[in-house]
Image (cartoon, rainbow, N blue to C red):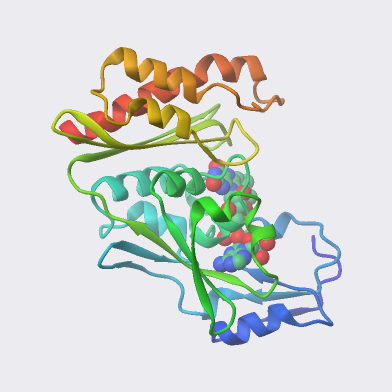
Length: 285
Ligand SMILES: Cc1cc2nc3c(=O)[nH]c(=O)nc-3n(C[C@H](O)[C@H](O)[C@H](O)COP(=O)(O)OP(=O)(O)OC[C@H]3O[C@@H](n4cnc5c(N)ncnc54)[C@H](O)[C@@H]3O)c2cc1C
């Protein structure tokens, strides 16, 4: 509960929203789907800047792939007919595993990325897809890779008056496959382990691969050393198992009431290997 909340603003332009966030005399914070903020007990927040009037609810095709507005409910991503191919497959699989149907109508793409938690489903998928975000500070804008945004936390990366306005996701051709695995105790529970894979195979050789993990770590991570073991190689069962084992090494695995560190470390390489195999089957299909 936001005990010291006194104002709710509903700007109609991004410039106006950023100016409100920049206000020196009042701590205003962006309101997207509100599912995180509704539970927040941050007594320093005085004002909310409701982003719902900013025309940021869209999924569009672009010359490189897709642009997804930050205020797009994740249920719209899950149900999108526009998102296709390997990119669409991964985005829809991740969005469709977020919380419950009711929650997915409120949770936004931007909110899910900015308030990243270990269980957040879109960030590892966006990492695997080499997605970028457009960030606005009034009129000035910059575009940064999701990987850069996630190096610390998005809240630390963003200036207080900056908003994530769009997510740009490349489209990949028929030689690319993707997979998304969320291992949780129930269909609606938070993830114990999340694995997002993108792999491109040309003439029998793995040309490019991304292995992104979450759920078992404090924040989403990519596994470049394991990816390097696969690049330029034929996808044999031994190589996939070796790469999966490498991807599961040297991680500070979460140990909590849902699952022990030991349990996670046992099943993690299995889920990664199966994830790569699933993605490879997407290419064959
Ligand atoms: C019961 C429950 C279960 C859940 N289960 C899952 C799950 O399984 N998987 C999953 O991925 N998520 C899950 N979530 C959602 C997740 O924990 C967050 O609540 C959600 O992602 C926040 O998105 P939102 O749109 O509601 O953002 P808000 O709550 O409105 O905002 C969250 C934060 O991000 C900032 N923010 C939002 N949008 C922007 C923007 N465009 N630019 C800059 N800053 C911004 C806000 O200022 C705030 O600090 C669950 C939530 C609940 C309540």
